[in-house]
Image 1 (spheres, rainbow, N blue to C red):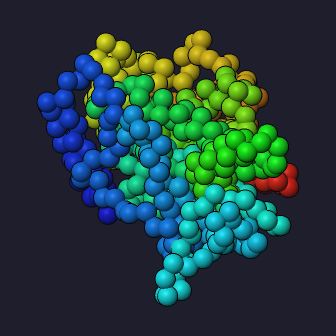
Image 2: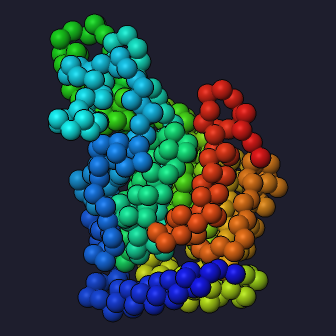
Image 3: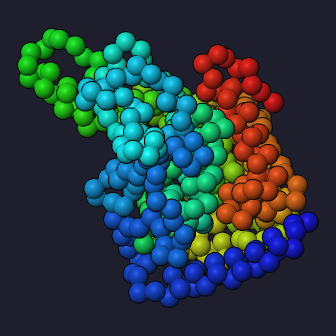
Length: 407
């Protein structure tokens, strides 16, 4: 069973979550319509500022707002392994590890790369979707920032934490559309970065256009991102978004080139359905997120006329869902012992394996929903073991040396 401190923390968490849901339900927001611009965090959410130095755990961060028509934003996590790219010069004449001040602190400046001699080191890209039952959480919260730093270091990848729009200000399908929009944006960034490789030819106008296009690329991704090794990771409701993005990527196929989603990790997904499972009955009043509160969150997320516990956003095993499971990307499923949502995640994992998809299941004892990402639980042995287990599995899909890592 969870410790006494976890039980007490769970009690206050559930109390605050219920109050938040009730406040949102009674607010002046017209729930019949969705706000196009939206919000990505709540005032009560503890946030941390981006830090472009490598002081905090060897990972630099920056925030990027990618859509002028909405609140959709990103936090990019860059591990300090890229500092080994000595000789990765830039068109602006300074190296990536220049220091801005006299303190000796390494500040990773933004630049549009034009390698001279030695190439910049390329890293896989992980798109990460936070939890919060669609109505809370943030990609720049203290807990999510710490978790993404951990994954960036363990996997040696660039983590892109997605700040999708929250409900009820922006209802379904806003958050799901935001997820795929980021994947599409990643492809466009790769195309812009490739303009730097265009050499003489095409005249002055062509060179001016290519230079302008390269300057529009997000510099950290342009220098070090390898979108052909893209991984999706979602936590709780973020896992629902990740699975949707994975499905859309399968349907898009080569249209997403050079982006290639090679694997996804679904951590304690918020799957639901109209017919209760054993865990939903036995653990309905479980720690942190009880079933009654989550159903209320679903009512705030789905448009009123579309509310249905068997909505495609919540039930991945509805008959006729596309694409067929046999075409799905490899999927690692993480479940917790004391999570009422666990049975549906297990069932989805089983169906993927029956369709010959690589879909292992990691089931952690004495754990609760979001056990590996909640601020209080980040330093527990289970949370650290979970991150390491995820890293072992993902590495077989992002390694350039082949599938040497496997369960």
